[in-house]
Length: 113
Image 1: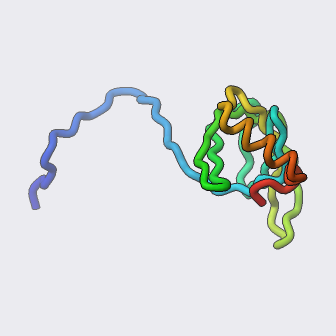
Image 2: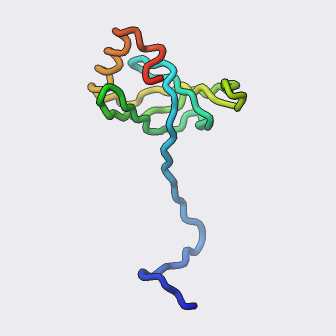
Image 3: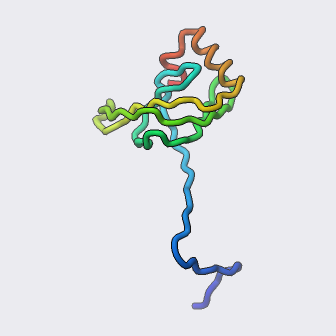
């Protein structure tokens, strides 16, 4: 059976660095103008930078975040879980406005949960 590839392939000599982006749904435990606390079954490395996307009240917003702390906890189902504190690096005005609405409505402790 011959090679069925349409496009040519090239051998890589040595190491070639790459990355893979994944989407992981997370529970937002609380939020403030400066950051948020999220619940995850996957730990994120401290000081790593990610993009956190929000979908709330008809808005799709995202913000770059830096992981400030990761605490291991036992989840309700007995699995290991993590509470991850993140700092917003460059929050858009629309996101800050949404957070202000959550806080004014008393939803800051459970926004998005």
